[in-house]
Amino acid sequence: MKYILLIIALICIWGGSQGVYTSINNSSPTVYDVNSFVNGIIPKEEWLQLENCNINLMESIYFESAFGNGLAEELFIPLNTQNDSITVFISEKSQNVLDVFNLINTQTDPEKAQNYFEKYEHLIFKDSITYSGIVKYGIDLDNKQWRQLSSTSPKIISKFLILDNNTTPDSIFSYFILGLGVLLLLLSIKSFLKKETE
Image 1 (cartoon, one colour):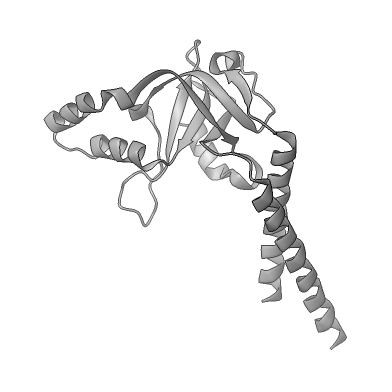
Image 2: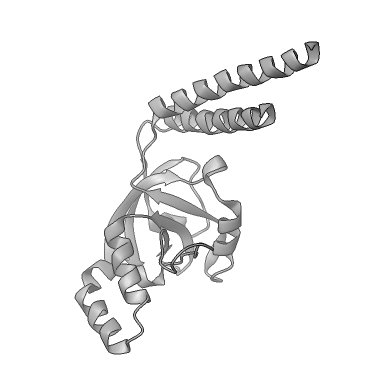
């Protein structure tokens, strides 16, 4: 039990520290034109606002859960730059977007799929739109998922980003998690010391 407590404490400290760092260093989103990444230059800021984004929703990538129903629960929407390279994926979890994607992607009748495609074309193809969110890194980045994404297309640059759509830094929650982690760490240390004196 004390080892589990220690692991939870370290996870909380890691996640809380990262959240505090992101909040302190990103008081507002840094604005970029997505086409400024054409030379593989990736921003160092963690909270970004990307302008002039063009998407095709049906080009999205998703990973099926081993215990899922085959439907996408999170989409990774590629953003193509002017030189046709993919530098950023948008992590999208909004239900209305997922519903449209799943409706078309799981349709086995080509005629119905085409009808749905035409009905929701305004949601599938979007030009010159803006996305804002926090870049997934550190504790929030699933490295296995990142590696799988990197192998899906030769257009993807080696240091691409995943932007978690519509997320913002939450300093209050981060400080709470950090404080909880420190408290759990002290309790864990106390339990180890108590064990040694017995």
